[in-house]
Amino acid sequence: MTISKGPQAFPRTEYLRRLDLVKAEMARRGVEVLVVSDQHNITYLTGYTARSAYVPQGLVVSSSQEEPIFILRRMDRPAAIYQCFMDQEKIVSYPEELIAHPQLDGYDAIIDYLLDAGFSTSGIGIEQYNVSTPTFDKFRKRLAEAELIDFTKVVAWIRLVKSDLEIEVMREAAAIADAAIARAAEVIRPGVREADACSEIAATLIRGANGKPGTQLEPLTLCASPRTGTCHITWAEDVFRNGSQVNLEVAGARHGYASALMRTYSIGTPSDRLQRVHDIHLEGLEAALETARPGATCSDVANAFYRSIEKRGLKKESRCGYAQGIGWTEPTASLRDGDLTLLAPNMTFHLMLGNWIDDDFGYVISETFRVTEIGVDVLTSSPRKIFQLA
Image 1 (cartoon, one colour):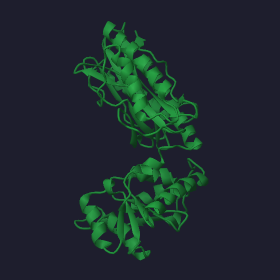
Image 2: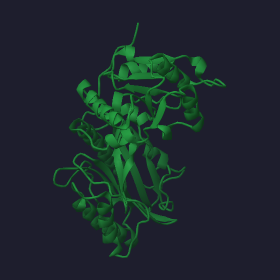
Image 3: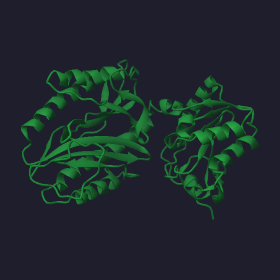
Image 4: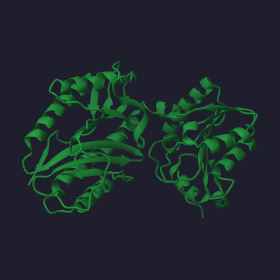
């Protein structure tokens, strides 16, 4: 008995719309068939979110076929049948003998398909950045008569502008992030283990909000005094203490889409330094949001923040944010000085104002927002305050 297709995150028409955008770009670049290897691009084009990208797999998009062909490991085919919008005959598996084989791997199965399907002399798009040098060499040698065309990040740039359906899923994810921030304020207390608090936060991220569960668990980062100058670090084997500051970053996740959120907590009255840094960053956050609108650049948004805090004697070395959607961070536009990407309606960003000022002191606040026709729509809604805890 074969597994049946499960509930789809988006209607078939939405996936076909996305594929049409990709095929139009393929035509502009002389690509007849495209091999998509980036796992987040595969999610975008099929709905597949299972975590199987640690072994070779590829989505073959042909300019002449409505649905793509997904080639992946045999044991992962049932998950693809369940999650992908395509008919199940479009999901092709390769045998287990290609796993940990000394010479062959799943990319050989993908190349075999391209040869058998008559693409040996075609323009073939490859996301070169996403495959190793030996793998690219394998494509080049086995498809010697084809023209290999680098398609790195092209699909990612296409998905920078979201559909209204995608925005609604990100709004659902944002509500989950808000719920996790609120739960953290309930469980962070003196004497509580950091691990126990994080388990409650993680449970909220999975349980979800408004009847919509989290469909996967994105990494959460938490640091408490004296480690608040750290950024990408998880909980310690320690307990919270009176007087501690706690920095937290979470993301709600729905169907591969993430909406992130950062807030700072204080067990007891915040220090004068922390309160001052918060007030300065809050002004900068508002300046950045006021600047974000169609026609402004990512650089404009970042520099609005930088100018605001620098007037008050602070600096932030890192970027102010990044495009967000599938897989938390999208590898395209950054809210940083010099990024001249023009904002357009339904682009979504994590305005990430974490500022790690000293080795032992940092502060975090952020919002996930979408660009509208006239400004911004902030998807997250947690209070913009230092959460003062007993």
